[in-house]
Length: 74
Image 1 (cartoon, rainbow, N blue to C red):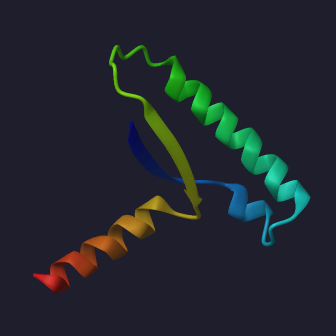
Image 2: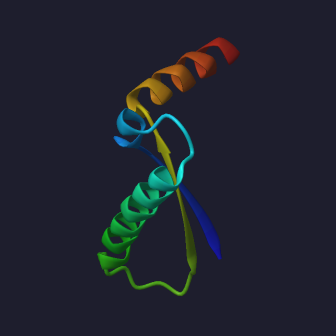
């Protein structure tokens, strides 16, 4: 079993600012769609992958911040 955490830019944060029932419904819809895409890739393996989807407002911003922190730590 291998956990796979996938962060991705999501438009959810443009339309939702609180964890409401509507946000949860939209989040589930988005996750099920992404999971279907993930499952549609036919990779033959004997490893079970646990997919954890983490929506964020901007993946580019996250990557930039992480890069800056890594460079400072060197």
